[in-house]
Image (cartoon, rainbow, N blue to C red; front, side, top):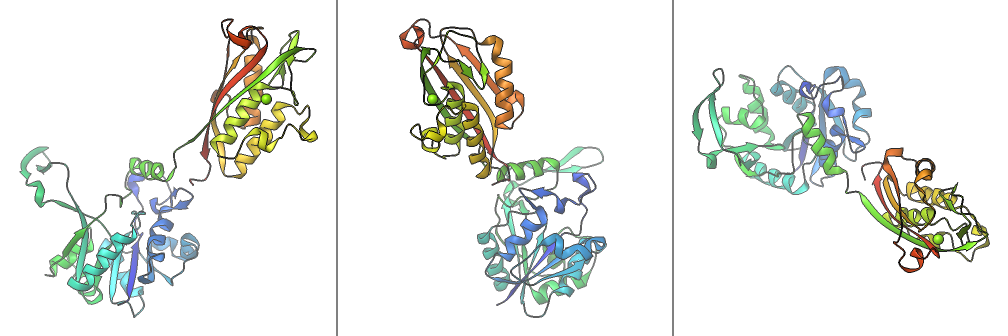
Length: 383
Ligand code: MG
């Protein structure tokens, strides 16, 4: 048995608005169309693909779909959906005896779903995946907005694609013509063919509205990554007190191999930690002369480069500096501005607070300065 897939992308998706046909909108770095094609191109059972495009996009077809592993052919969309499918079927080379017809607006068709449809189409001639209705279904007098009846829910299933057909069944169904059909199974039904229903897949959503597109994008965007950092340095006389490159006038400053900028050190660990990219000591060892007296802001900048190279961006940072004296409030605006520049994110995503230790412990006695930080990273490319 050989299987061909027709991806129907003939529509213009007016409901999503905008000048770009919806199948060409971006969905996590690839277009909806490319993802829909890839679901079949990556399926071992499929040997040929036909993409039905709006006529004016035909010339750009190969560029719009991109490279495929299987031969990919193109057909121009027709007036009605069944015309588009008829054109697609005409462009399908001889060979495949089972034909799948799929909406380009469903980019999440999984391998097992496609397997089920192929098996049932081969056995029964026509197969449609469907999921049971979960909501109560009403039949309406649409003009008056009045419920005419409540339909027994057990009998209501919602059809998806890909729908599968033995080639001659699909050919007869589209040749029979008739009124507009919103799917191919209804054409086969009209032609008198018993259409087998297989389990659909709740994940196999159809992108129709801006809300659909938003949930599809959310599904592809991974959870944010979170990291924490902590640092403490002794305060000694004769050292400047420096926080994110901003000098805070004080008679003592942190002792350290580097400049002892606890704030930058804590944030550096938080940034590296969120990417599971090690810690400050691993990247900037305190025994390495390269980093002697290195400004904390510079180490943070290097750490940001490390995580950006791994595909992350800084979504936000919050930090607390704990020291008994002096008050750092007057310097926070300058400190945040420095951090935002180095973190390469907006100022309103960077927060720094000052806190005392209420006279308790070494920090409370003014012998040390400490900082805590949390960083949130996002992937920049929908990974
Ligand atoms: Mg440190």
